[in-house]
Amino acid sequence: MMRWLLLALLPQLSTAVTGQGPRGVHPINERYIAVADSSIDSIIIVDGHSGGAVVGHLVLHDRSEDDNTNSWLNPISLASCDECNHIFLTSNQDLYAIALDRPLADMAESHDFSSLSNAAVEEYWPDNWSEKYKGDGYLRMISIAHDGSSAYVAHAKGGIFSFDPLDPAQSSLAAKHVVHIGDADIGDDINGLHHTRSLKNLVVTRSKYVHILKLVAEDGTNPLDYGEPIAYKLTLNYHCSKLYDGVEMTFMDTAIINEYAFVLGHPKHSDKSEHNGVALYRLTWYDEDEAWKDCTQIAGSGLEGAGWVDGSGEEAKFSSTPHDIAVLPSLDSHTIIVGDVDNHALRYVDVTIPVETHDQTDKVRVSSVAYDEDLYQVLYTNEEPWTTLSLESVMEQDGKSYYHSGPEGLYSMTFDAAQDECGRVGIGRICTLPELRARFARGQYPTIDGDDTTWTTVWSAESCMGCHLEDPGRCPVQEDGDSSWGENFKMIAIFNPQVGLQNQCVHVDRPVDTMSMCCGLGGPAVINPTSESNEQDKGNVDSKQAGVISAGVVVPLFLIAAAAYGLYMRKRTKPSWWPKFLRNDSREETGHAPHREVDLRGRDYI
Image 1 (cartoon, rainbow, N blue to C red):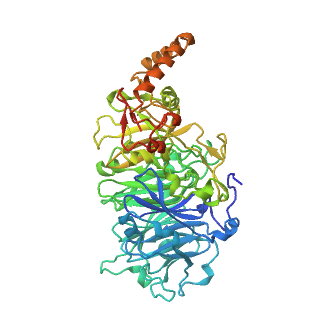
Image 2: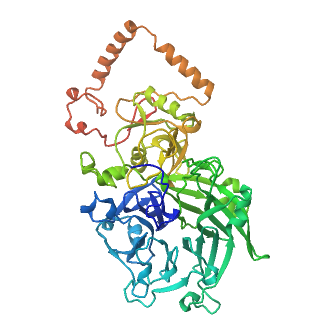
Image 3: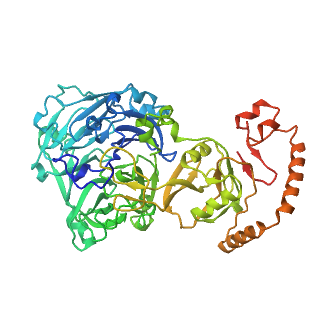
């Protein structure tokens, strides 16, 4: 059943855990992200450099319970550390320790996550934690220091609990109830929890406040270890509601980069939509005032309905249910990852320019890491072809493609114009995202100048449909409405060999400077792109005029040309579309040439 969630999943749950999708995100390094996806009840490892390819996964429940979704874990958050031999995961009911054969960081370094699927999932509730908080539906986020020096779990009504992520024994003395509700003015309704990069503070986000807890006192000790929490309180609603004339707001999570706090939230009610999408806000620390001030909206609307739109921060749209953000570990950029639950994707919000320049918040850029390639069907549909596939195998799809390199191959196209170009060359259609991944990975893509630092942009056939799921599953194909959106949006793929593949969701009628790249069956043909819209219109007219030439002239010429071409190809390597009965070399029947073939018109056909 797929519809807007009007009530909580369980009577005791708050809106912090509604929606089904990527609820928890944990960046392993700059490239790989571990994701807790409740729509498929799995942990997946997403390759951010390959446009969202899944390179490892772990189903969290017993596979004999596939049909009984009530027995699924329904994950909320996950975390690990560089030397941790466990992944720690929260559901609304319990905390779990997932034993690994080696740390995630080591798997990432070797680009091999194959052993993850064999990991054991075990409940973990230390002896020093009160049983009254277990299974009550209020467990929330988890945060672990990257060096494993500390780890904390948030309970919406109970406070904050600590444990040792390097040695998660039941009898561990490090496991304590370190913050009770009311300590350091921290109330209930805790939503988010994050270590700062320096590991000196723990950022606690509540519905209307952020509390910054000290983890390192002046004498070098951790105040939480001694039951003496010290926190700075930031009144989010006071600062940010001014953007909406004082409308009441709610907030889900906070991440701090340098002197800026980036907060995920939105107004609780909007006249524009019953389910308004979230926005990302920035507050600035002022040393002279020793205060956070100046709330600025940098990405998303906050008032308009849920959507999936990329580009500038101003034009970007998110769904209404994200509640976890993280900072991508990188030395040369500042990127915030948003687990966009109802869009079933990760969203990258690049805040590098406003962080480095202390200005230019209009330079924020949003892109998508779209990993949801029929994952639910692959895992849970017990029929062909799904039973023969894996989450990793559906990420790439090989085959034939056609493209045109060089400066003359770049021109402004809408999605329909790009599709028309593919139809004109005989290949037939725009490439899907899995097809683009396969071709980009092996270096078969159009470029303007052949330089590895140059970006290549092409339209893809990937939809930007989002929906709100009450239960695990997948989005239905339906028109835009209260529970689904994105019918008229497609992804453009942007590739650079040094950085990787990125995606952006844009409206199909928006002209984008792209190169033509087509996939499918058929032989090579001439593509004649134009750089100006009036030239494109002229080309369309010329094509229509050419189509009325008498068949009595075309057919004889075609037969003569085909016979001549057949004689010419008799002793040469045939393309994969060459009829089998005219072949005399069985090696050519595989459909794959051992090298790139370039036809005499200067176009690449692979």
